[in-house]
Image 1 (cartoon, rainbow, N blue to C red):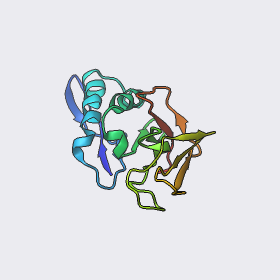
Image 2: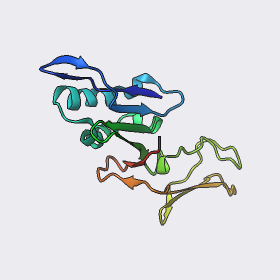
Image 3: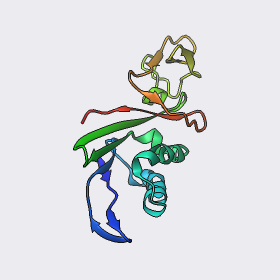
Image 4: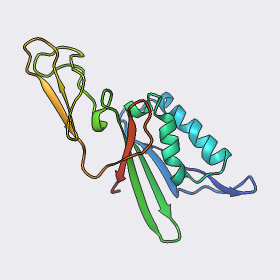
Length: 169
């Protein structure tokens, strides 16, 4: 897991470095180049424009939705409130019916017939996405129900959106 933390200071002078805000990327084999769009948006909104990180997260995530980052990793945001001595954390998971149904990856091949890239277009039944193998005669399929407790973002980009829920540290 990789972390970034905004530095605190006054009058453009660094007075302290604290870890009141952490952003973690959950990919086991994270490719640093893929998180560049996140850092660019973070730098612009938080460091240059001076917005707080918490309220800016949904805009930073929406902006990175067009990159490869959402297909590669989930994002965890942890915030420590010094006034109340409380810690809150949120996990952000990208969902798209074709690329990442409810945050899951479609397998590269059908588990029944091993046919590569064989999945049909999504069939949505309630809040479950189902994919059937397109190979003639193969009964292979996979389904992904919507995970419990996640709230969908109201910002949709090319059919995908981020979903989030409280994350227990």
